[in-house]
Image (cartoon, rainbow, N blue to C red; front, side, top):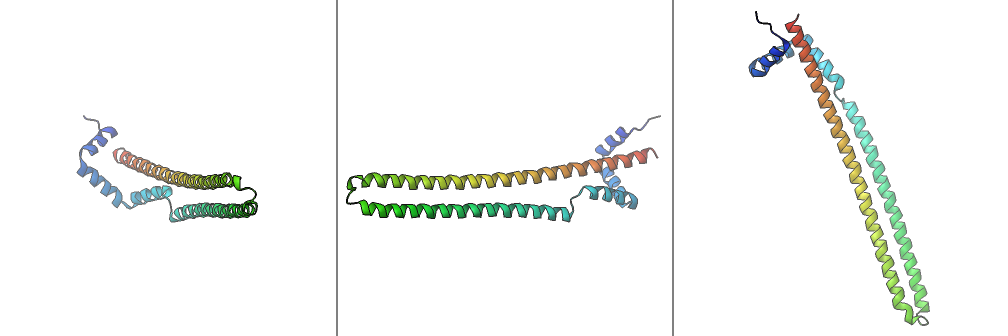
Length: 174
């Protein structure tokens, strides 16, 4: 007499796709089993409300980042305006002292050009830093969403495997 084990049944289903499909159809058409599967899966599936809450959180984070960028822009504009005002005042002073300081004019102009170049470089570096920071935050959020998706997928598969195993055990050993 041949003893049929759960492992042997699983091997038989692995070898026979048609029977595997029929078993799935039988399980899905059985109202109690179908309801049990749906209830088990629904416990681990994100709801629209979960997604809406996540979207709200992401929108708030994005709004906060946009506010921070806008604040930095305003500060940069103020600094640039202040720098331009400083340059204008310096020019006026230089014009007044031009007659007396004619030998030093070239040196002063070189210093001003260096300050403007340095200011432009500082602005470019700040812009690059902000862009990198935004990219890192977006990448971090994408990675977190990807991780949650994978975790959800693994959970659903695990639940389905558990349900199918339980069903098979009950079929084999009533």
